[in-house]
Structure formats: C-alpha cells, structure tokens
Image (cartoon, rainbow, N blue to C red; front, side, top):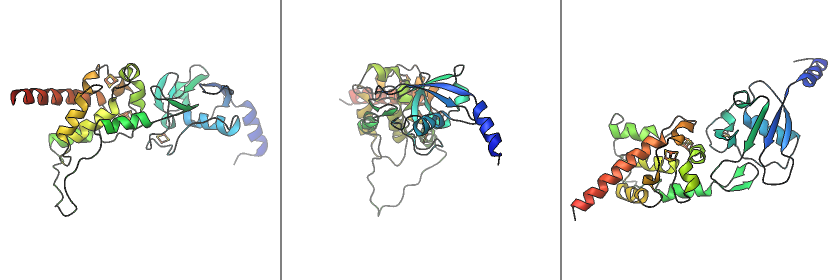
Length: 250
Ligand code: SF4
Ligand code: SF4
Ligand code: FES
C-alpha cells in the first residue's frame, strides 16, 4: 500500500475533469471530478453522488453490462455507462452526461422505462406457449436457419440504448421501437413459440415494423452488437407475405 504522504501528494496532483450533468432540478450541474485509471462513466456519476451531491438520482445495478439499467446519454450518444471508459469519451477534459433520450425523465439521470416495456408487450414480445407440463419437450434443431436467426437477437438486455438512438421513436410516439420489434422477430423464429399470427398482427399495424426508416442507428449503437434493423427487415418481409397470402385466400 502507498504511504500516506505519497497518497496525499497523488491526490493533490490528480487531474480533474469537468463533468456537466443535465438535471431536472435546479441543483448544481457542473462538477470537477478526479480522474482515475480504468474509470467508467458510471464511476464518474457515482463519484459525484457520493462526494459532491447526494441528491443526484441515477440508476444502475450490475456494473458489468448485464442488467441494462445504467444507460445514459454521454456527449449526446446513448451508452451503457458501466462499460464505457471515461477516457474514451472525454472531449478535451470535459464530458456531458444526460438522461436517456426518448423516455420520460423521472429525476436527473433516471428515466421511466415503462413506455419501453409497454411496447414489448404491445409487440407480443413474450412467449406464446400451448403445451402443458405433461407434454413432451419439443426438440429444437440448433442448426436450423430459424434457430440461428432467433439466437441472433437473444442476448438483448433491454437497456434501451437502441430506443434512445432511434429517430423514428423520437418523431412517432406510437412506434414500437427496435428492441421490441427485434424481440418479436426472435419469437417468430423460435420453434417453441406458438404466437406467429398474433405477433404478425401486432407488428404490422400503426407504429409497427413498417414505420422503421431503416437508417440503422439501433444497430450502430447497440452495445451488445445486436442488429435490430435486420430483425425489423425480417418482420417487414413476413408481414408483407402474410398480407398477400390473406388477400389470395379471400
Ligand atoms: S437491442 Fe441492444 S441496444 Fe437495444 S435494448 Fe437490446 S441490448 Fe440494448
Ligand atoms: S433502423 Fe428502424 S428501428 Fe433502427 S434506428 Fe432506424 S428507424 Fe429506428
Ligand atoms: S449497471 Fe448493469 S448494464 Fe450497466
């Protein structure tokens, strides 16, 4: 361990950064925060809350990119703050941190995620099963094209980074958004899900997959390297096929 005198000298010479926080209250919004090695944006926010202003509100849980609760706007870009090193995003010695875009702000950096999750439900983004516990478990062919497609979106952690990045969400309150639609696509390709017609109906209406402009911000910003834009393209194809099929059978 470093001797006390040396620790004091290090603390005195430690570089500080200027952190601006977009807040809902009139509280202090600019802070000088000491810079440490391997410091994340979430560490910076936590330092402010623990050392400068205990009233600062924000949300996190796992700190390792698994829970999806720490996303914020960092210099205008949506990011997982726990997996973003401050050194990678500093603009000179400054950084601006704000609440996630496209969601109502509860206080300071904490947003209300209800609209995001409500849209998962509206997109039928939950399992539709029709087996009972007495039925045999259906075999899943891991190598089938459908399973490979379903697996492509399965690691979504509901962080809402893609939702914050999407300009269509910003301009159309009804749009279901990239994460909910990607979830619908995953289920559509899941051999164990029985909700095909219900899902296609849910995603083809107002605010559904056809509202997507295919600009790809969702895919560009997803920190998990998922590809909602391609998933939504799949939904567009399948909903169009279902539409024409219904027309022919009339
Ligand atoms: S698709 Fe990516 S960015 Fe969007 S909610 Fe899932 S993990 Fe987050
Ligand atoms: S591709 Fe579609 S879902 Fe993705 S950001 Fe653009 S409009 Fe939103
Ligand atoms: S704190 Fe869980 S993903 Fe960042």
